[in-house]
Length: 274
Image 1 (cartoon, one colour):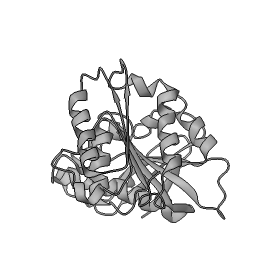
Image 2: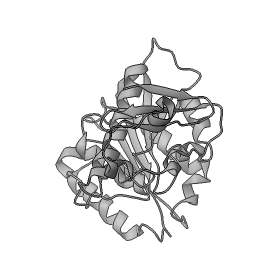
Image 3: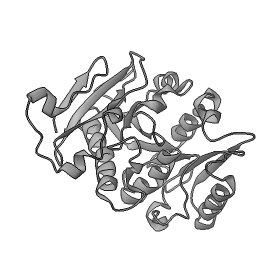
């Protein structure tokens, strides 16, 4: 796949760059809009990039953060982060303290789009767009792991809202990749897109606001109870008075729970506890 770097976050389509039409089915192209390529973060530490999806010929954006401590000779942990519905692909990098914490703890972070801003990462069904959404995440994952020296024992997946549901689905689909998973205000072990047997070895962090009116807290508690029933390594953090979004996006102390948890778990701890 061809990787295109955009210092100012500008994303060009392959068709525009070459002045020719992209040979992709019209119905596929119609699923994407210009707003899908928009970004939210202007922090110079964030690299706005794109690549050409071979299956469709479309240029898809993603964002990458590499800590200043990165050493090509030493493997680094990777955090794959999935945004909520309608948000820009780099949205999670704008959460209070997120990039500072990634810098402090030495995490490489990548935020894929999921093909469109409402792609769902595949958990919603088996439509063409669902498949493209999952493919996009995994293509971006391959680009980063091919380019950078990533510790295969410390690759983590987390998401918020729609991204939270995406983490359960992608953990089920690719269970051998992840050293730990974090689901914030989204997803459930009881959903039909989750293969409980496939993911029961993966440590899970679940963060939920007690007053979430979008994703009912009662259902999240039932999901955590399922983890307990299965004997899974897990940590449930319920934030009193927390809503669906601002309780984490504007609270660095809640964001820090992600790093604290992932710092404790790796593939080396999956069998022996943490």
